[in-house]
Length: 217
Image 1 (cartoon, helix red, strand yellow):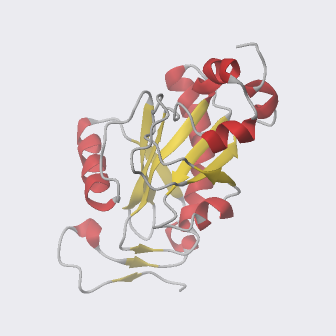
Image 2 (cartoon, rainbow, N blue to C red):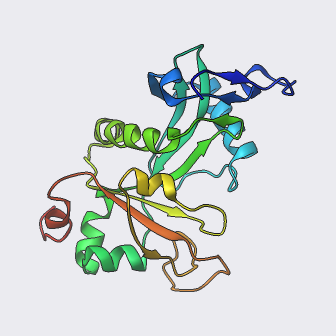
Image 3 (tube, helix red, strand yellow):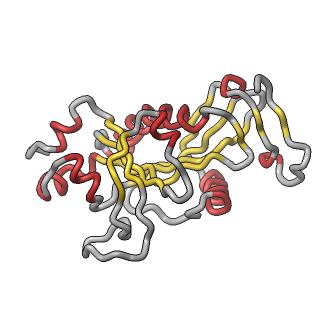
């Protein structure tokens, strides 16, 4: 579709109008970092209501964003969160090839895309992969500014029983295997009845592998 269309059946809040359009129609898209209490509440409301995992307090460090369209009128398209990485992911760790010493030393250089939500009434082809590409250039600078470390590698987990992960692959993320079905911060190697998820990675530095395997900090 070349123009925007709003669904006449939506009768709730203004931001609940269904938006069907081409990606070019809503450009430029911006990622607004969530800082103010009202923005935090709004972000939590959207994620709790519309993300299949709901809202949970992020483990460790985190940065949150609202996905904003500038035209044809300012509107919210979705939410993003990047947070501290999982302690262990076998597929990730095997693909990197690091040992326990390397992992303990350099794990803070990884970031986890722990929430990605395109609101269910937004129907814009290629929006998700475009936002992912935009978010990676944004998060590297913001993470260093707020936490003093420049990330080298991004990770995410995709529930393949619900999603194909196509938008990540379209944004050049690398599928490295499946989780073992344990909790995110599991250090006792115990299964918790969780369905295995696809593990996808995205290099954020050209020398990321050399750095992650080095013995220096």
